Amino acid sequence: MARIVMKFGGTSVADLDRIRNVAKRVKAEVDKGNEVAVVVSAMSGTTNQLVAWCQQLSPLFDAREYDAVVATGEQVTAGLLAIALQELGQEARSWQGWQIAVETDGAHGKARIQSIEGEELISRMKQGQVPVVAGFQGIGPDNRVTTLGRGGSDTSAVALAAALKADQCDIYTDVDGVYTTDPRIVPGARKLNKITYEEMLELASVGAKVLQTRSVELAMKEHVRVQVLSSFADIPGTLVVDEEEVVEQEIVAGIAYSRDEAKVTVRRVPDRPGIAAAVFVPLADAGINVDMIVQNVSADGTTDVTFTVGKTDFLRAKAVLDGVQKEIGFAEIVSDQNVAKISVVGVGMRSHAGVAGTMFKTLADRGINIQVISTSEIKVSVLVAAEYTELAVRALHTAYKLDA
Image (cartoon, rainbow, N blue to C red; front, side):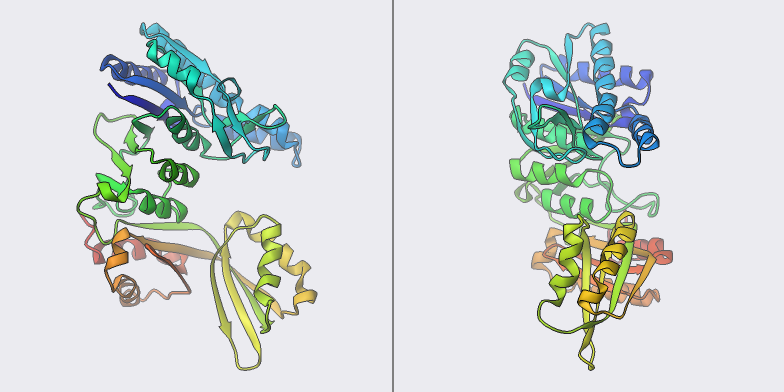
């Protein structure tokens, strides 16, 4: 007998027929003798509608009331799934975040989970009941409902699995696993049987949409085995596990891309100690995340600082820099939103040389100019013109022998 947390995303519970299908899957696991808890997202499109209503009433809405509104989507799904399970003869009960309680910090709209009380749910599961938990939400220090930010239901599921000491957290979505790259771009992309936490974290952070980054961070920290699999096909998915569990480790696990990038260049910045802080501290204070950074020093005592931000942060970043232009003394800001980030990820890079060289040569052979480069221990990312995104992904997928 295993203890399993099953999480179902918005497309998996998009309508009543799909909710009935989910109920059958959950009951099948219980019938195998497993203890099961379920975490659900809002029905597909619901959260977008709730957010739009808040924005239409007030562009500068109260974040506490925003949370009160958008948290209702998951509450509806949890109640409906509990009813569907009961209709199949399976005892079930829905739970909202505050009832468990999923305790978070007070950052409404993007709260982080601090603790989960799992004893009551464990007791219910031992009695044969299925707890159906509304994902994406918790309760803050002010005793008000909080939400975890977009994709937060994945984080809810992993955190609940850790609190319940579950053997596995199965995340059901509209894809049947983690692929070496986007199959819509490369039809020959392969589904991976297993991938390490580190590789999945890097892929999620550079554009792969399969799992939310915070959920992977939490799974790695708490050693929660995660499986990504399809709600619509009864086939094995991809396991996200410790590196020790991956026996035959590929040098490169996958190729990811992101078109959600904007490049900003601050031209002719005085080259003196502290200038990098003068540029990036105001951005950090404004809550703007900076990704790739490169600095070029010229002979006249000035430097150009180039970095990338998410497209949604671009206008705010430019406004922040405009506000400190006189203080810093730079000449101008040059920007480009027609760019894409291409990343090669794999823990095998630690022990194999030449991965970056292969990437650079492959892109050069296709006439693709590299604008910015950034690296980590298991990742190499480059910024290229957006029009070359698909060509770059296909070429690199073949170069690293990832094609099926």
